[in-house]
Image 1 (tube, rainbow, N blue to C red):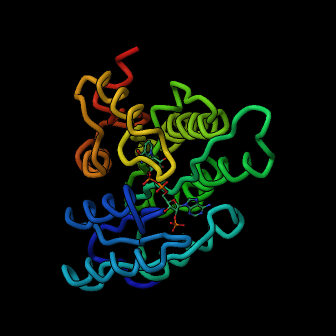
Image 2: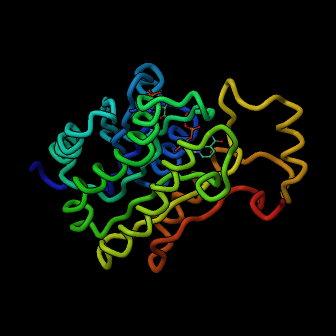
Length: 248
Ligand SMILES: NC(=O)c1ccc[n+]([C@@H]2O[C@H](COP(=O)([O-])OP(=O)(O)OC[C@H]3O[C@@H](n4cnc5c(N)ncnc54)[C@H](OP(=O)(O)O)[C@@H]3O)[C@@H](O)[C@H]2O)c1
C-alpha cells in the first residue's frame, strides 16, 4: 500500500458525463480527490480530469471498467488503493436505463439492467468495506423515484433500482457505526436522448410542485451533503424530485 493520500478520496462510477461528471466536480470542489470510473466515455473523462488537475494537481485517477464484469470489481478497488492508499467515499452512479416492454424483455436486458444498477454497486461496496471502515467513510447510491413508483414499460429497471434501495438500507444496518450508507433518488433531471416526448415532459413538470426539472447540481449537492455534512444519517434515501412524488 502506498502512503495514505493526504486528502479524502471519492470513487464516482460513471463519472465521464451528465450527473456523474457534475457529482465529481462538486466533490472535487469540496476537497475530495477522485477516482473517476468510466466505461466508454474516455474522451469526456479525460477532459474532466484535465480540468480538475488544473485546479488541483495529483487529484484524479482514471479507472476504466465494464461494471458487468463482476469478478473484476475487487481489482478496481485494489487499483484505487494502490494509488491513493485510502478511500473515503463511494458513489454508485453508473446505470443502464432502457425500456423492457412486457412481452419483449430478454434475459440479456435483465442482466444488463441488474448488473449496473444493483450487482456492481453491491460488489464494489463489498470490496471497498475495509478501506471505507478505516476511513469512517460513506457510500451513496444513485437510485430513482421509479424504485418506489413504477414507470410504465420499465419494469426491470424499476426492479433493479428497488434492489439498490433495499441494499442501501441493508448495508446501513450492517456497516454502522464506521460506514454510513445512503441513497439519492432523483426525479427528472436529464432526459435520455430517446426519452419522453416534449409535451409529456412539460405536462409532468406542471404536476411537480417545484415546476421544473432538477439539475445535476441539485443531485450532486445532496450527494455531498450525505457524505460530508450528515454524520447522524444512515440508511436514508433522499428524493431530489421537486416534490414530484407528492402529486398523483
Ligand atoms: N438523469 C436523470 O434524470 C435521472 C433520474 C433518476 C435517476 N437517475 C440516476 O442518476 C444516476 C446518473 O444519471 P445519468 O442520467 O447521468 O446516467 P447515464 O448518463 O444514463 O449513465 C451514467 C453512466 O453509467 C455508465 N454505465 C452504464 N452502464 C455501465 C456498465 N455496465 N459498466 C460501466 N459503466 C456503465 C456509462 O458510462 P460510459 O459513458 O463511460 O460508458 C454512463 O455514462 C443514474 O444512477 C441514474 O439511474 C438519473
